[in-house]
Length: 117
Length: 114
Image 1 (tube, rainbow over the protein chains, first blue to last red):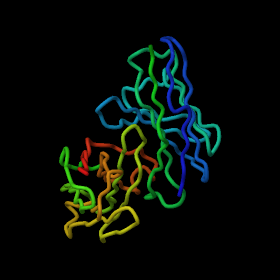
Image 2: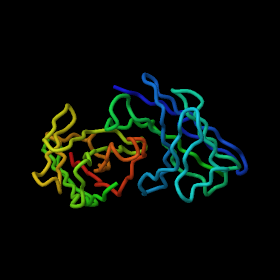
Image 3: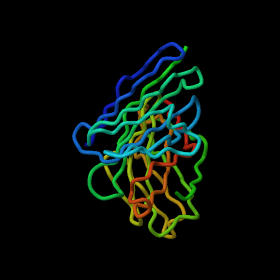
Image 4: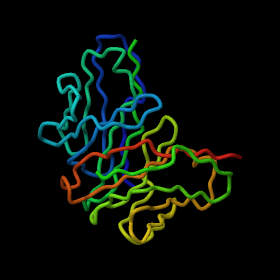
């Protein structure tokens, strides 16, 4: 089945550092990818929709200047958390909808656990 | 996406069937019922989806009520590896061109006892 790969799996860094997370669709082309964030004991919250070749669409309350999204190819989207602070520590997960009809399921990466000291 | 209601948690014994309910009384005619599950420290995993008829795949079965206001995910023989949070999500592929992200509720935390 369709596979989405996310890298790195976990990151620990100092406050003020910028962190880049990669999301790749390994065996299909994804014109649209999604980025979610999950805090401990909470459900996933959609942050933004990443569109290949165009600007990302951010959900209300998500700072676009802080969470930079680049979707330069049909198989790669990146999320950069700029000047990260401890409150940005979370589990970040990407997904891509499988090819074909629009009711196809989404395929998720295994997530990136970000810890800001 | 229309709202769904699921029990916060359920407990079952290993090797027994599990029935996970989901209520979606405001479902529209074009909403598909999707189920995903999330194992600890992993991203969600697609389980099954359907529109009106019951659906079966290698992971589970989906039983949809005739009025489509509720559905049940059936794990025929639970194993310890099925312990996860199960999410029931409605998706309208004709809304946003299928390009919308998923709206996750709290889901059902399934506990499997050995």
